Amino acid sequence: MRTLGINWVWHDPAAAIVDNGQVVAMAEEERFNRSKHSRNRLPKYSASWCLAFAGIDSSDLDAVAVGWDIPSMGATPFVDREDLFRGLFGDRAGQMRNVDLVWVDHHKAHAASTFYASSYSDAAVLVMDGSGEDQSISIFDATTDRGLRLVHQWGINCSLGAMYEAATVSLGFGLLECGKTMGLAPYSGSGLSRTLPFPELLGQLHAGRSAPNIDGTNYVGALKSWREYFSTAFGDVTTPVELLERDSKALAIAASAQRTVENVYRVLYAEALCSTGRDRVCLAGGVALNSVANGKLPGSCYVPPWAHDAGVALGAAWVLEPPARGGLEPAASPYLGRTIAETEGADAAREAGLHVEQFSVSESVRQLTNGGIGAVAAGRAEIGPRALGHRSIIALPRPAAVHRRLNALKRREMWRPFAPVSTAEAGKRLWPSHGPREQYMVGNEATSGYARAVMPAAVHVDGTTRPQVLEEESHLRSILRELESGGHPGVLVNTSFNGRGEPIVDSAQDALKAFQSMPLDFVILGNLLVTKTPRGTLARA
Image 1 (cartoon, rainbow, N blue to C red):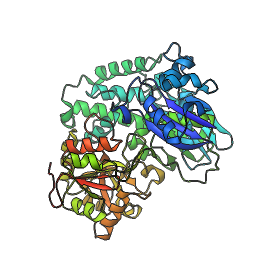
Image 2 (image 1 turned 45 degrees about the vertical axis):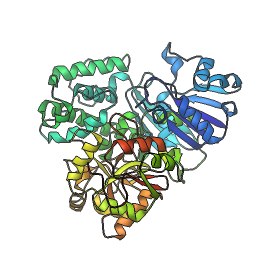
Image 3 (image 1 turned 90 degrees about the vertical axis):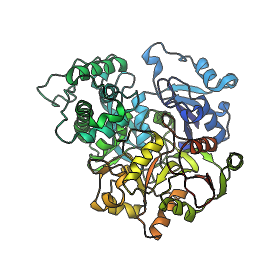
Image 4 (image 1 turned 90 degrees about the horizontal axis):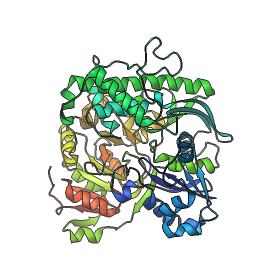
């Protein structure tokens, strides 16, 4: 059975091909049209690429699964099967008379996207986001033999996502920029945060405290209610975003939103385990990208790299056709996107006056240890909002001034943190292992004194970091091992390869364009090493 899963409507459209339960390809629309989050667009380019990668035509599909039950939500464009197929596949839609269209409950698609990606044979699944069709929090009991069973669900008036995004907008950031609020919160210290009067989720949470009047009709209403609450409770923030770490009002909003998420997380985590009788949890939904809250959960916990809405493309396909396995295989790989071929981009790089040679681990390490900042665009692109070594900017995480150089290079606020990537052996000395959470940069950890000495540019003001331990063979892993063999710690700063306001680069063309527009010293492009000058000269920021 061949199924195309899609996420569509609102933001982060994506497509995934599943063949007999196995993932063949997955891609996000923003990587093709270069519009971050690609709001209100069909995933037509990503769907077309997935079909081409799988070597099939749209008429070869058995089903198209959408990660939303849109007909249940009332009048929405493209609810009609023919209109939707025409929008996705153009003239080919007329050949798809035998292809089923299946609408999948949004939270169920999220749940499938995390449980079936994990290596677990059974787990509780906790989904938290802005909203699904009419819910914002769901708990499922999941087993590989019986699938997903809904246990509990809460409405949009209990939306952690709406609360946190309202705090984010109140601080002066845009929609879908909640990661900035999470990065700002630790600057508050311990005296500014308070637990918000969040609606009582389980009848005991914040007992005796009245909840704000939250509109639970839809996400827009909930967001508006929470924005009014923050304005009344804290006052309006007028400080420019680049200086928010100095504004006590802004810090109080960020810290209070973060503290509330962490407190509610603990309640929901306990409820998920106790109501299902399981001893491990899978998380999904946009709120599950809150790596600080994830890092504070005890026990065995899995968060996929695609916890955001793009992940429901894969989850919807898996609801129709889950993988046939008993929880013994490794977790699904995040590297499911477009491939940069071995010498792709060589001619374009030379025509642009760039120096091109074969990739060399030793030369890459030499550039890094001489203070250079490089980038990697090699292999299949990772899926999700965090670069995992295939589309990354890298640098030695010391001295501490590297932090400022990188923020200037990416034109970010100077207070924003960076994360490290390491080998498993090096990671043991830098932070306590948190299992699968450290594979995809989805869980913050406290750092050791040794870590704070050797990677100051990748440790946040509260002494934590959001690590990635790289286990799959890649150019980046070769560089880390070469650093270790040369007497250096096997750790680098790893941040996404993109300019301000842009999606992560995807193709060789994207990578070369970004490389030329930023003060980077080198880029590993497929099996090539591209620099702006011959060996020996660095392009300083």
